[in-house]
Image (cartoon, rainbow, N blue to C red; front, side):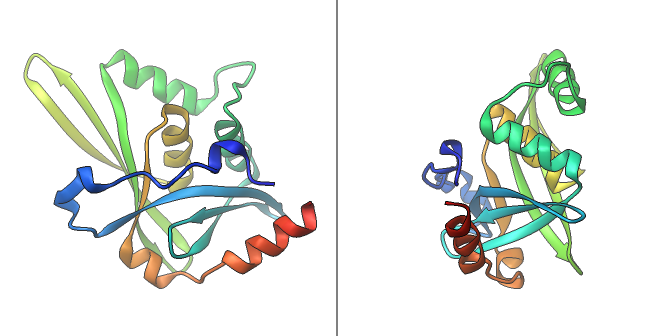
Length: 165
């Protein structure tokens, strides 16, 4: 079953006109356990694809999708507390590359201080970035080149969800 938090419409990325439509918004449509971790299904308007993550990060993603808090702060909670303490916030996540099944992402963080507005791009694992984006309600994007290079898993996800109903 698709969590309610994942049944939203795709975010509008026209605000990012400088990206020249090189990215597409994606939503997390499911987190499924596998024999070696978890499969995270992400969907754009045209295709669904999978990023495989270890079990712990899969659980963190599912908690963030469900809006649940852990009893004690986890690493992602610590990261968000640090960002907040520095007056910074997550702006968005861009899954920008894939190489032989390994995905890469950029975490876009902004901060305002006495020197002005600053935007920082940080190289990060997509899985960690997704947790931070979900926890802060910020959008997740994927480079069009990534969408074009991954296999479409839309039908497979639909069959898995049918079997689970």
